[in-house]
Length: 164
Image (cartoon, rainbow, N blue to C red; front, side, top):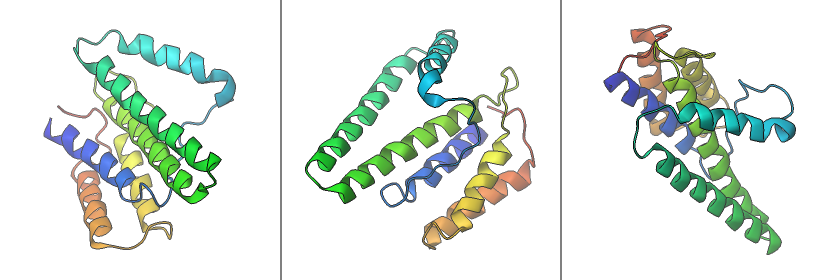
């Protein structure tokens, strides 16, 4: 479980670093037309999730979904009132939260009994590349997150099949 916690912490730290400054969009799984397929994809995800024995999974997703909706509505209201800068910052939070959700799901799908299409090292490497780019302001916090990610990659270069 320690490795999973470390990986999830990396995901959350990565998206949290610039949550109101820059939306983080790392396209690794774009296939087809999202507008046409969004509900079908959601349906597949929900039915796959129904097999789990966890007792609060759906409630927690619902609470998170409500946060996403609330932030999106606040952003919409800010745009209507002409405050586009504030709306953009709220939307950046939404975009980054969605990115963290997506990457956490991909990371958790790397357990030996699951099927996964992206290895954890690929996710962490994309974070490191993005953090070292000019899109992020240099800081000790970023350096610390990058170092932690590099150590995880070094410990298990591909670590396919995350250990609990």
